[in-house]
Image 1 (cartoon, one colour):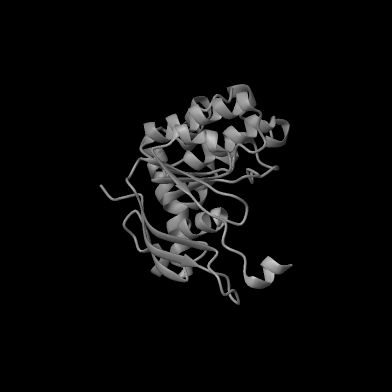
Image 2: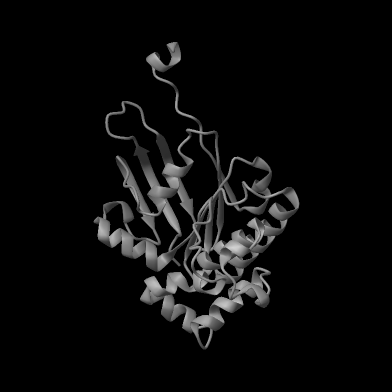
Length: 235
C-alpha cells in the first residue's frame, strides 16, 4: 500500500525572502496512520498544509502524496488530485451558509467524480452516504435539512469533518479545527475524528498549537519558528 505522504529535503521560502519559512529533512507517513503537527506562530504549520494539499509547491525538495510527486505536477493536475484524494477541515470550517447541513456534506462528491463513485460504493445514494457520515459524527437527523448557520460551533465542526470524510479520501488534513471549542467538546471531537479516520483507512495530518492533543496520534512533528534576520533581531 502506498505511503500517505513522503517528504525529502523540503524547503519553502516566499519570494524575496532570504530565509526558509519551512524546512523538513525527511518525513514519511504510512497509509491510514496519523500525524500531529505543532509549533508556534510563524513556524510554517499552515505553509506545510498548503504544500501537502498542492496549493503551494516547495522551493526545494520533493513531496509525494499517495506515491504521486505532487510537488512536480502542474497546477490544474494538483487541483484535481486534491479534489479526488484529500479531505480538508478548515480552522473556520468554510461551510456554505446557504446550503443545508447534508448538502454541505455531499459537496466534495459534487466536485469529484472519483469521490462520488466511492461514496456510492458504500451506500445506495449520496444522501444515504452523507447521512451515514453525519450519524457517525453525532449529528442528529433532525438537523440535516437545516442551514448550517443554525447549528452550534461544535456541531458545525463535526459537519465540516463529515464533509472532509465524504467519498473516502485517502488523506484528511485538519488545520487547527479545535481552536474554538471548550475542552469537553475537544475531547469528544478528537475521539470521533480519529476513530472515523481509522475506520475508513484515511491518513490524518492534524495541526494544532495544543500539545495535549498529541496523545491521539501515531507520529508527532514539531516545527520551530525560523530564526529572525539581523534586522528583525535589532528591531
